[in-house]
Length: 291
Image 1 (cartoon, one colour):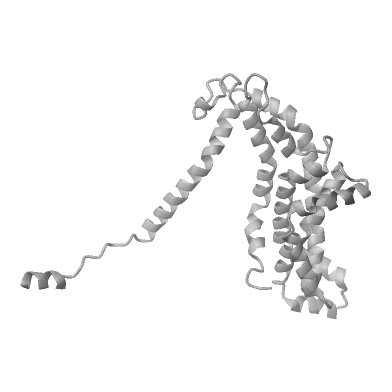
Image 2 (cartoon, helix red, strand yellow):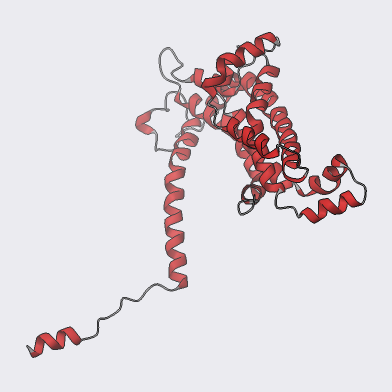
């Protein structure tokens, strides 16, 4: 009885928790594991793209090339070059037009309000939830009437129209964070709507433009459905040509070409993220606590 009482009253030893340095090492180790898991497919893509056709095989996917070859990259470039040109013709102007229109819409809906502005904004938001498949047939009919179906301009128009709701939402939430006193001061000084936008709002819109440009450029560059349904062989972007390379080769699957093609098609979006990425989270989170 005495031994039991002694054991019950004996203080328990506390397991020491890791200090700030230990917690930092644990977080670093967890992040390192995620990075390694994420980079495994990238490693396979890169090493396979530099292998010769005879060496590129699933059984040797993990091994480095015995003889480094650029044949896969040359073949991928020759195959994807027309699609890359079309993708740039679609994505660059489409992203810029979407950003400008979204900025103007967001500015008016947040700082230059009018009767029914909330209802108009709700309609913009409703447009974000309409799936692509639901508008394909009427959209094709509209582009046919405008004589734009199967053309680069038709694809740009379709992407811009479909991207206006999300662009307006991003800019509107960002502009809500701009103090209203600045807008009122500009009005008192006699500045109109466009002058206020150009002199006060536009100079601080860099992060929001970065978010929209990344979002729209990536969306347009990776588009496949609009390109197949509304485009033609002359206007097909790189995603369609990349899909057509899958399983190509009468005798053997050209894994080196396919891996090089996948890397080549993803490089432009990677460059855009590298150039504008430092503004991305700042612009995306702006307005999260307001509006």
